[in-house]
Structures are given as C-alpha cells and as structure tokens.
Length: 370
Ligand SMILES: *Cc1c(COP(=O)(O)O)cnc(C)c1O
Image (cartoon, rainbow, N blue to C red; front, top):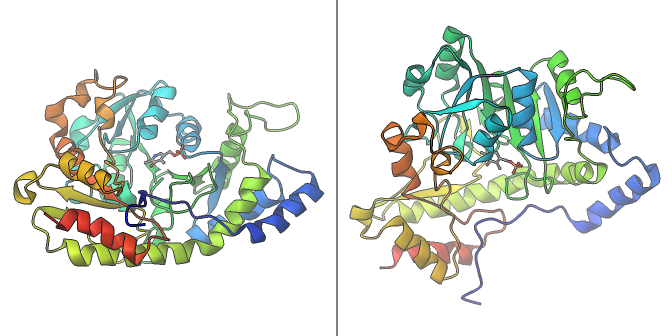
C-alpha cells in the first residue's frame, strides 16, 4: 500500500447511479446534440453559478480561445504570456496572429502589467493574459492599458473556474474569458470548455461560430468551426456542478495542510491566498530555491517520482521554448528572465478533492525528509 502511485490530479466524477436516469432521458428524447435540452440547462446553470451574463459551451477549452479571436476579429500581434499551457499561444497561431511574449510577475506568475506597454507596436490589437493557477491577474491595470491603446482583452481563464474577488466573478473582466472543462480541471465535462461574454449579440455570433457559421437553415455568416457540446456531456456537467463546491472545499483543506508544514521548509515557497479572493485551489505549485533547499527542482521531482508521488513541472518548458515559437524576437531569454526562473523552479504537488490525509503526508514526507 505504501507505494501506491499518487497522481497529480484525479477527476471529479458524478455518481453513476445519478447519471443513469439522465442517460435514460436522453435516449427517450433522441436529441443528441445541437443546443439540446441539457445543453441549454447547463448554460443557464453555469451563468448562475459563475455569476456571468452569457456563456457558450464548447467541446474543449482551446476552441473558445480560437473563436474569441475570430469573434473580435483580432489580427496582427497579440501580447501574451509564455508561462501557460501551449493552447493559449496555439490559438493565436491558428488565427495567423503573431504572439508577443511579455515576462511574468514572480509573485503571481501572471503577465507583468508593468511590462506590457513596452511590447505594444502599431500591429498590436489585443492582450491575452492567463489567470495562472486561478490567481487573478491585475485586471484593472490591464484594462487601463487596453483602453489607452484601444486593445481588446481576452482572458484565458482555463484555471479560474469559480474564482471571485469580493463576491464578483473574475470571468467578467476584459472583453471575453474562456474556460476549460477538461478532465484534469477543477470542474470537468470530460472534455469541454466555454466562452464568456457580456453582450447578447456577441453571444449569438459566438454560437454561430461554433456551429460552422450557421445563422439559419441556409445562411452561413462566418467561417465557423464545430465546437458543439452533446447532451451526454451536458448532463454530466449538470451533475458535476452540484458537487463542485464541496470539491473546492476539499482542495482548500489540502492546501491548508500543505502550507502548514511547508512554511517551515527552507528553500521551498508557495502561494498564499489573496485577500478578498475566493480561490478554487486548482493547483498547488511549490518553488524550489536550489541553494537554500540543497537540491534542484529536477532532483526533487525525480526523488518524488521514485517514491511514487507524481508532481508535475507545470509550466515547464515555457511556451516560448517550443520549436513553433522559439524563433520569435520576444521569445529570447533576456526578455523572459522571470518566466525562466519560475519555470525552472516549479513543481505542482498532487491536488484533488479525494486526496487522503495519508497521501498528503506521503507527499510532504518526500519534500521534508533529507
Ligand atoms: C487546459 C488549458 C487550456 C486548454 O483547454 P483544453 O480543454 O484542454 O483544450 C488552455 N489554457 C490553459 C491555461 C489550460 O490550462
């Protein structure tokens, strides 16, 4: 038992007994996709839960990024962060947009607002920040810059499901925000995602875009794509929504236990909660200071692995290091010193709602024991 593998994440699953009646109903209705009954129910339920005015469901978290850029007709250059999952930058590439990387703030791991203005050129049309680990970006500063230069802001909020500041959703910041409901995220529909906007007309356009551009039986108004969610995933999503609060609370308890022990470990740092923020505890990153800790990040990562404790070096390597992007001027090391430092020191510890006390202690033991 001692050596059972502890994975970095584990999906939130609805009970099969609860799911079967939904399946029965879907079989009876014989309406499987294209804005069906459960699709509509889930959009309504998510608007309410997330405190957002309009949401469009998608089959994953990458398509809403691509469709947001299409809906807002973004072209030229977009300012973004190298410290994210590749899908953020890939969405730009698929739209023929040049990504311009800006370094991050070491305290939040989010794009550093102080460095955005220097990266703006006449070709810049938008900023695409990421709420990394669900920690809110400085949305006010970013909006000020966007307003000053007439730029759009699209947040990749894939990590930020349910995150609020003073009771208000951070998903309402900027022009649009995108979510991922992938199996590894806090809330999942197996594969899935969503695009959040503030305007009924834009919501309609997004819904055209995710259905090939169909605006009626014979009318195509845009070169759309297929991002439509089926009834089975929508029903699954409705059930998972009912238990996401208790899952987040279980994650919070785990974070408290990790912090309690790790605060006394020389050379290991982690993120604290921010005042007024409802966090979702989607990840628990630690940062290894090689000199103070006496071991490199990779040494610790592989030591954990030997003991069947699977962390994840997330985000490493930086997006700017991948072959598609490393030739860009903004991908140069000198431009991204903080991002490199963080990427070389991070390990995300196992974090999920069913992590047991014993498992938490095994994770901690790997880090604390010499
Ligand atoms: C998961 C994730 C995505 C992509 O979501 P998929 O649902 O896997 O397509 C995009 N951006 C970030 C930051 C993510 O973590």
